[in-house]
Length: 283
View (cartoon, rainbow, N blue to C red):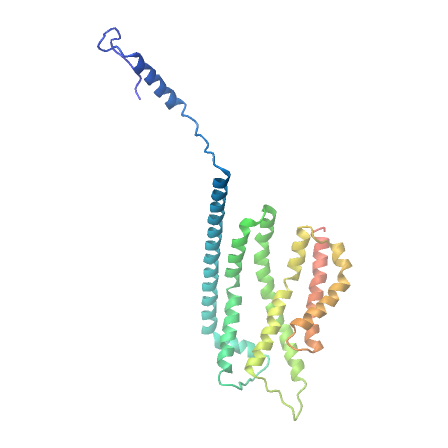
């Protein structure tokens, strides 16, 4: 805005009035120092209504995000299932290899077994995606230290799970199949049903994937200060007993051999965890 100027102040026709000069000064003062916004005051009832509305908006946004992540996870599992079903013959060949020839006793047994294998393989294969979606949903609620821990927790957990599954497939499963086939005699030959055999294989592979997460869980608890090496050493005997109890629960058969095959890796991983916590984490 141009400054208020009068070329000839003495000219009565051009001489400004006192009111116009005052109004001009007020406009200039407002432009240079705009008035501060007056904070609106609300009654207690109005404030509660506003807080409730904000809370509902927050809940709706969380539900919307949860729905989005569930949809992404479901799509990932469906794609994983489709890919696994495309290679179902190769997957079945790998799973059947330790036992040799199998049979199916019902017309639908083979079909539903193929579908089960494809679904389990699809869930496992897409685990990096849906585990990331779970992690991304809860990470805004974590503290900075907890976020730092979870940044390496998820990748390591996925790697350990696959190591556990491979360990069971190449070492534990062949030994278990060989042990049970060893009961065959001249008049008693093994005749495995494909449905029961695949159930046995899945029950042997998946628990080892979870068992191999044990070092990561114990190191995470040590990192946040809930346990230390002294505590782990003190609870060693209790954990050994717990390992055999867990082996009896998750074992696909009630025999001692299968329970021991599950319990022994847990004990070894526990000792490895004690060593890592004591030597490298200084806990």
